[in-house]
Image 1 (spheres, rainbow, N blue to C red):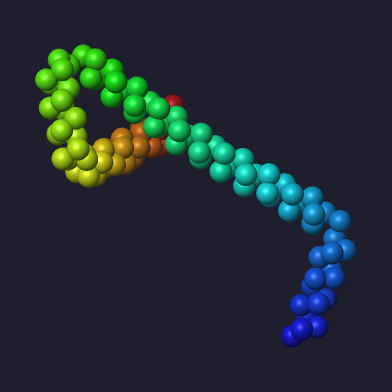
Image 2: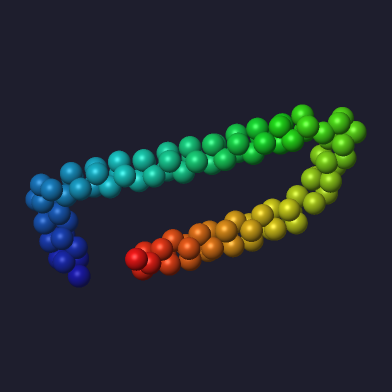
Length: 103
């Protein structure tokens, strides 16, 4: 068993393309992580902007009431929004899927 591992290690070291492939995989992984972080940041900023816009429309008393309501119902609100997003995504996929076959 040890012989097999040593043999595979030697073979991997002698593969010139291996290091290039590993570097490319690391670059792709890093890029994916950066895109995930950028998307998360963008989503948070958009949410904050929308909240500010909403609070600018409301009177100070309404804004305070909304903030209190949001704090009390945050978990429920997130659950409802996740369901709605999933529903919207599924609906969009169905409409796009159907469009492929329409002629």
